[in-house]
Length: 189
Image (tube, one colour):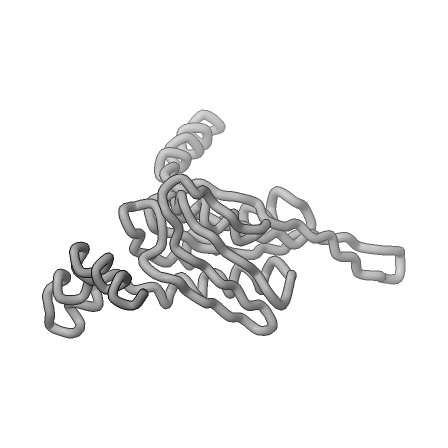
């Protein structure tokens, strides 16, 4: 009987999705005062992604830290979003995201810039697979609100292909011509 249980456990591990990486962003110890003293619990905030354009976050609460992390990871995998990346390394355009008092600004960056972002935002970009981005967080420094604001901004991002499809045009009509861009800048100067 115990042998059969072991086989079941191994099979379950193979069903798990190893293509997802996860990052523990914050862990919070909370206490509740009861008649016999204090009861401690833990709240975990986790970001999960495949580093190819999918990312999600989750929070979990439990009496023990590993259980809280497990719950948060499961919730993050259920709440994943897909984000179109430019050349697989950066954002298509500048974005602003908001949640409550949290506000984040994310800007596309040239190759080699790296991830310039603080704390929780960095975790989201790394799990998403972004290589070059410049971002700034203003307002709330609460990691929950920063992550929600970042995810809110990322959901607003649109690729030129999706814009062209929605407007019934070709991608070449949407994007500025490479020859004309320097000429237009020279004319303005």
